[in-house]
Length: 267
Length: 292
Ligand SMILES: Nc1ncnc2c1ncn2[C@@H]1O[C@H](COP(=O)(O)OP(=O)(O)OP(=O)(O)O)[C@@H](O)[C@H]1O
Ligand SMILES: [Mg+2]
Image (cartoon, rainbow over all chains, first blue to last red; front, side, top):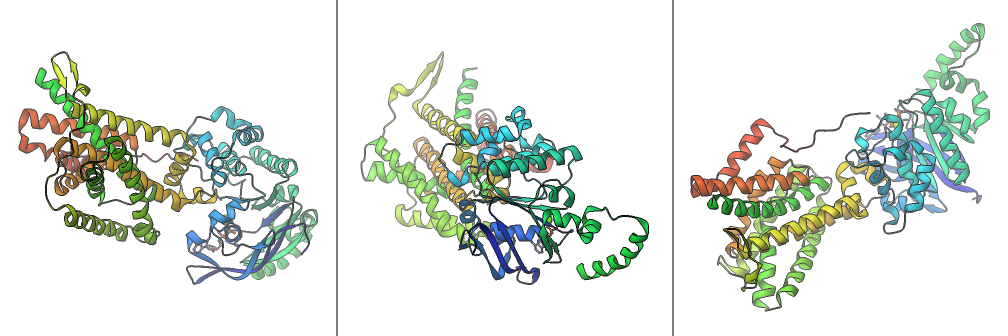
C-alpha cells in the first residue's frame, strides 16, 4: 500500500436491517491531506458510505457485509463509533444536528469527548478563528441559531475533536449562495492550514469540485466514475447531470438521447 | 400565623426532598428515555445502606455517610451494567417492564434481609442545628433536609452546567446520534446517569429515614411521589423537577395542616391527574425549539 493513502474502501457492501442492500461493492481511496469529493444524486448511497466509515451504521441497524475499510493500515469495518472517533475520524452529519438545548460553546465542548480531561482552550480559539460569527453567539442556545451559524457550529464542533479525517455530509444544504461560498472557503482553509484530510459529500458538485483534489461519482450504490477534480469538471456527463452547464442547442438534443440512456443506466 | 410559617418550613423541606428524589428520576429519563419504576426501591436501598453502616457496623457517621455515597453510586453503575445495558435498543415497554421487575426484586431482597420492621438511625443530628426565627423553630431534621438536598441539587446543577462530563451527558439527552458522531461514549453516559441517580436517591432515602424511620414499604412508596413531581415539572427538565418538588411538598403539607391529614396523601395525585388533563407536558416541559 502506498504510504500517502489514509483511507481505503475495498469493495464494500452495506445492508440495512439484514435485507436492504444499499452499497454494492464500493471501492475508493482517500489520500492524506487531500479533499476528496463524493458526488451523486439523492439516494445514491453517499451518506451510507460515510456512515460505514465512521461506524454510525450500527445504531441504524446497518452492516458492512462484504469488503473492508482500511484506515492507517488497520481494518476498521468492525469497530464502534467510540473507537473510530478516537482514531481521528469525525463525521459531520447531514442536516446539521446541533444540541438544541446547549449553548454554542457547550456544543463545541462536546467535541472534546474523544480526549476528555485534556485542555481545549486552544481548540476553542481555533474554531472561533475559522468561524468568527460564532464568537458573538457563544452563549446562545443552539436551537435559536440560524442555518448558517448552525453549519459553522457543527463543523466547529467536529474540529474540536482534532480530526485527521473529516467527513462532511452536504454542508451546503439549504444555505444561501454567499454562505455556501464562505463555508467552502473555510473547508479549503482547514484542509490547507490544519492538514486535515476531508471527504466531502455534496449535491452542489460545482462548488465541491472547485475545492476538491479528487472526486468520485456515485449512483445506485456503486461508484460510476472517478477522476482528478479538475478533469471531472470537464467531463460532459458530470457537466450535464451535476453542474447543469450542458452547452448549446444542437449538441443538447443529441445529448438528450445519450442522457436518457445514461439515466437508465445510472438510476 | 405561626402555624402557617411552621407549615411553610415543613412544606419547603419536604419539597426539597421530593426535588432531590425526582432529580435521579429525571436524569435517567433524560439520558436514556427509561421510566424507572424501581425508583422508590433505590431510595429504600440507600436508606438501608446507611442503616447497615451506621447502626449495624457502628461506623462513625461521616464515614457511614461517605460509604453510602460510594456504595449507592457503585450500585447504580452495576444495575445499569447488569440489567439495563442488555436491553439498549429494545422497545420502551420492555425496558419499563424490566424496571417493574427490578422493583419487586429489590423489595423482595430488602424484605429478606431486613424484614418489614421499622428501624431508626442512631441519634446523630446535633441539637444546635436547629434555628430559631422569631417564634418559629426549625428543628434539626428539617435543617438537615434543607442542607443535604440543597447541597446536592446545587452540586449536580453545577456539574451539569459546567463540567465536561455533565455537558456530554446533556448532549446525549439532546441528540444521541450527534453525540455518538463526536465520540461521546453513550453507554458510559447511561451508566453514569444510573450511578448518579442511585446516589441522589440514597441521599433522599437517608433523609426520609431520619424523618420517619427506615422501613422498606414506607420509604419505597415515596418513590411514587416522583410521578406527580416530574409530571408537574416536566419530565425533561431538572429545574422543573425542583419547582415541581417544592409545589407538591407545599401543597401536601398545607392540605394536611389546614384541611385534613387523610387528604394529604391524595392531593399530589389529584394534581397529577389534573395536570395530565390540562397541560400534558408539565408546567416546564420542553416546548421543542423549532427553527432551521
Ligand atoms: N436506516 C436505513 N434503513 C434502510 N434503508 C436506508 C437507511 N438509510 C438509508 N437507506 C436507504 O439507502 C439508500 C441510500 O441512502 P443514503 O442516505 O446513503 O443516500 P444519499 O446518497 O446520502 O442521499 P441524499 O443525497 O438524499 O442524502 C436510500 O434508498 C435510502 O432509502
Ligand atoms: Mg445523504
